[in-house]
Image (cartoon, rainbow, N blue to C red; front, side):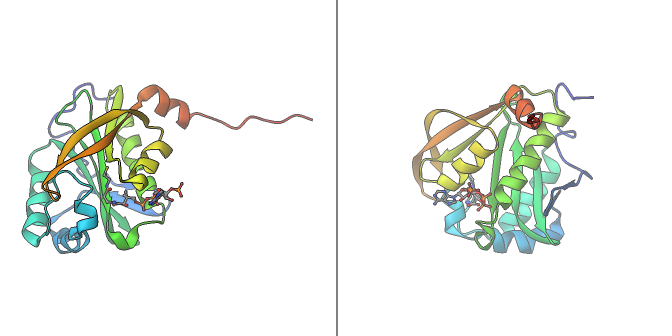
Length: 197
Ligand SMILES: CC(C)(COP(=O)(O)OP(=O)(O)OC[C@H]1O[C@@H](n2cnc3c(N)ncnc32)[C@H](O)[C@@H]1OP(=O)(O)O)[C@@H](O)C(=O)NCCC(=O)NCCS
């Protein structure tokens, strides 16, 4: 049964593990701190994330893992490929009417479709677990890879806003996107047409 109003506990994946064709998505633990810090400490990632610190130290990763375990405001999955962490995907529930999808991958893992694969799994999890009518996301206008992921997942452009990016020390224009349950459901159920002679 879908949860109407996600509670602070129910938003977290907890023991939930999502398996995709190539990836495993699971809750991060303190054992992952070193790997997360190594992956996230890259300006090319920080410049596209609103709140990711740069440089990104072990303490930042420890704080991140502890906050994920404690506050319940986010659904966060560590993305693994062959048991190696490659990035993070999550849903921010601070505005429950408009849960927001976010993700980043270590730079050496870009360009292999992992971002799309992980985003799709997190989107399915959110729509399947919770009675939400939509999800939103944003991508800097200079971030075509992220825009591409959102469009491939069915998100539709809804406007441009100016958002603050900590690593830039300034604000930057972002494209805003929305995925409604109706579009998600349609894409998931779009079957093959049979061709007759
Ligand atoms: C955005 C990010 C997750 C993409 O991860 P990824 O695994 O490389 O993405 P994918 O391979 O699934 O898909 C990216 C798509 O964008 C395309 N793309 C990548 N770079 C591009 C560019 N410079 N111009 C146009 N398209 C580009 C890819 O070709 C691919 O599309 P395709 O499948 O149609 O070929 C990764 O670059 C990242 O972590 N960036 C920093 C953090 C970030 O931007 N997070 C998102 C914040 S909203």
